[in-house]
Image (tube, rainbow, N blue to C red; front, side):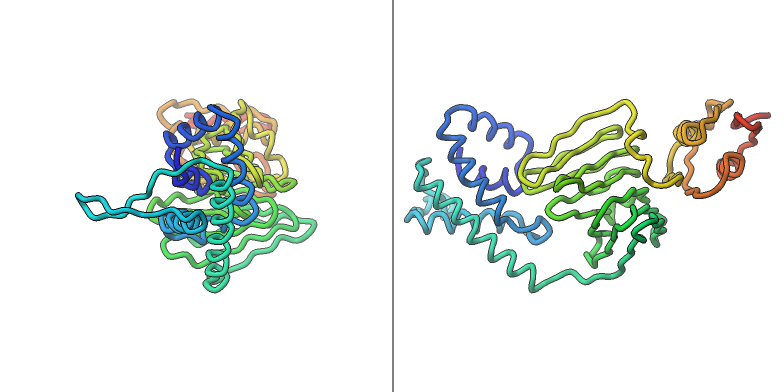
Length: 328
């Protein structure tokens, strides 16, 4: 186990195999875990936000160079390629202190660089303290911000990048060439699908994936969360993911709003039926995969179903308590 791998794990740039290697090494001996924790404490307190590091390799290299300087480590040239290679390191308390101090020193420099290159704010949306707010973005994405929340759009090249204060539900128009990223402090959520909720709660950031897939990252790594998953990213630890049969029960707060983003018709039927307490049936299996993009606020059951059937280009039969989609 070497320092470079430790820093890669802490910076979130390690591969799954590397993270597994690090976990095994930590369990091998108490001194290994103590060494890791010494570096982790400094990292948690001082590491820069992920977006501050456009070149993660440069950050890792800078930490290792600083640690070598503090311990008097030396370099030697390889005869084959002339590239610099580090001498073997001894995992000692002195080395752990030096590595932790290097993390703090280098992170401070990156924080200063970040403050001098703040991203430009393109737009800000704030919800009233008593009412949620629905935002329709230029790309067709829909965001429902909880009362008292704020969503900020930042200039970020090809990314659609936002910061969030408070809770919000996202129905994202997916575009692989223009990633959709939401940042809550040191946690970032990258859209890999369509619909999810972000809820900062007591310092932890909870992400509920209703449909599709997201990637949740913090200074301790990155995890993919599939449909039905609930990810909790604490401020000082690894993100935990659990799966539930019914995550919809966690999303009652949006205030009667239904939001769909390229959502399959059978999924739409299920959610509308649950929302209104009605029975929605799709008669023709061939239309189940047709997708719906729409959002509804104060409309009643009949209005919602008529709009959905029109969007899907299929007939509907409605009663007070049922809807049959694709009825002939």
